[in-house]
Image 1 (tube, one colour):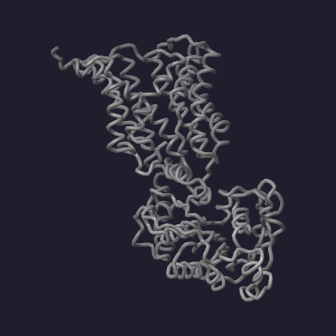
Image 2 (cartoon, rainbow over the protein chains, first blue to last red):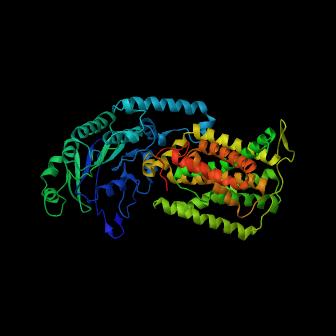
Image 3 (tube, each protein chain N blue to C red):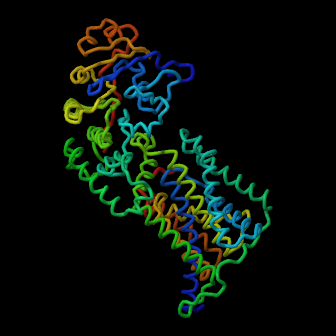
Length: 260
Length: 294
């Protein structure tokens, strides 16, 4: 993965076990988001491959990866502002609806029935599950930051993903919101059997919920293993506490203003 | 000067006729804005090239009307698709202002193409609408005005229904709001771009055929687009219904002012309305509140 002459990623190997929660961490500029965007299809790596169940999906565009079961959230919230929470979440199902553009006219009844089923399913599985029922008809733009992050998670879940990719799910959140989100991520894994890959700066949260942690620095993988192994790794300690790393880890998430 | 009632009715109907064509062109503008957030300043010229393509088919190749209209619409869709693919999509990642500037350039390109192929001379389209004037009570309506009003209204009714009930409509909105998020949920973003430009070019070409059949065609007829910008700003840049209502209203207002106060007051009236709307409701009468203004 290169940007012009800059090598953002260099020979990284990341293996995500089905059903696990895997975290990608590293100081600022380590290449976490580049790796993440390569996996979700938003960047095309020059070399290297992305495999899903042993199948090479490197050339598959982002929108088709959604159909393969990859769902993602964004570091800077990417919700459809101006739409309600429910509309946002329903759009997550867009890729999976079987009635197409013109079918919706030809088979009025079928499209309607599908719409009703979709709505019922989303109500039950996503909105109740993430406790968003009190805000379902609120325009997302007026929600506080923490809830917007949660709506983004809900939209990704509505895609019925096999792999859920979260780009800094708790960035800029207070302790209570962080714990709430961490619990939601664990619940999603336990009850839906979804594989979770996340990029995160909040060390406490990463160490608490992850099964596997991969540490990047300057575009290279410097360590990988269980949280305990990674914490004890001298390279990791050096990257975070001294020498080349960014010492502000954990608190350097951009200050995010509450959205009124 | 005593104003006769019948005069008011006839002027109103003529105004609504022109207004329906402004509305139809406005709808073409709105379709592009709604899906791609591109302000397309070349909408008047897309209308013009549609009218000339129709001229080519109906007068040049002397095709019958039932063949030349569909042929024109297909060619217009292709032109829209080519414009999107070659001029708009490569700039997707750039600043919206550069795309906006490109559409200004596009106006000159389209005018140039038309003048190269057909020269700058004004022309008349072959007559294809029924010639018999329409009488509504005692009011006399020129047949072309009446039929173009009916055709434009029918097309707009179909488009409004489609966008209200079709699920793809929300995909267009999603694409306009956030392209990265839209593709993350599996929406075919480049497809939405192509689709909206092709549909808008088709609608604009149809408007061009109707405008041309009423007033003739020339390479300068894209100026019709200027009134259309007023229409879409008043109606709200992303509202099809807004374009319809504002189009009819502005067409009616221009006709009334022109008839009873004098032609020189037409633009004064139109732009006064624009000014008032911009002050009171900057996002237009029916537009979404958060629209960015350039």
